[in-house]
Image 1 (spheres, rainbow, N blue to C red):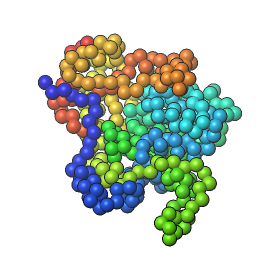
Image 2: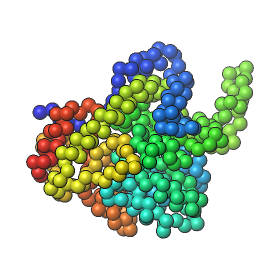
Image 3: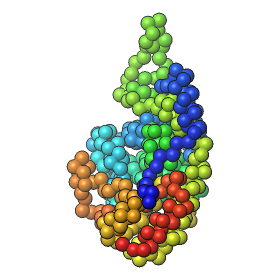
Image 4: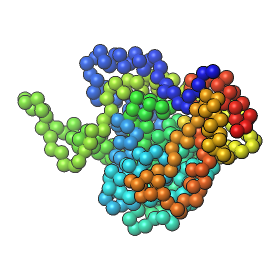
Length: 368
């Protein structure tokens, strides 16, 4: 019996061809492919000012900096995420302040934010868990009331929509990931969407050591003259990665539709199964369906049963506040504690056949 994998990277033949062209061109660093990819993804997500970078983590770090977070500032965020969300805050010298999540979605609970705001709070950083958009209007309203920046960690949610708007055109700062197993991969990479042309110019400068490429002066010695006045980073994307992304972009809508079809079949087949609770869905938003998460009673027994049937399942991420770097597990996040005890995700990627999906459903329906 063939093992059903949890994830499988999607790379099409056009991506392979584009990479070969880049490798033969002699220009493998940041060049025309990066700009082309940046523009096309920006158009896809409705962003006016997109900036490609070399990972979703570096996109988050730049967003935190551009949002004005300084050493000692606080950022209200979620612990139900990959460690990178907190790492980006810590890298800027900020302090993550964890709010609770919604048990039915895994997303930051808007109702648990306001009482955590202090005079040191600078921003709110929320994650669209599994690709399902947060309650963004509520979060943005709170931020507006207190004059806070808002950052959307959209590592899971490219292609999602919220009240008719694409993720990428909702929060002032939005960060996408193109890591290997994401919907759209460049091998590794990311994209930061910023709200103004001034911040776009600054982001482009910061992603390459703080050097302003447009103001540097050529020199007969071969090294242009520049004056770096602000600490920058080596965060730019290269043309090899961009070529992979450009090829895969051609199939993005088809692959997203396939994910959604698989999720629809999962939800129909698992509705009412004893010991299982489906996540909430609201009509005003559409998930990007990076994960298909469910709540399960007797989770370890469930995972053992699925492993015995050669079907991979995973929690993907467990609460990151348990890490020493994040301060240790918080006791004031009761819904996150519930979530941590019961959530798990099923296989979800475009290579799953209809027969694979039915095998997953039938295995669960048989019980554990």
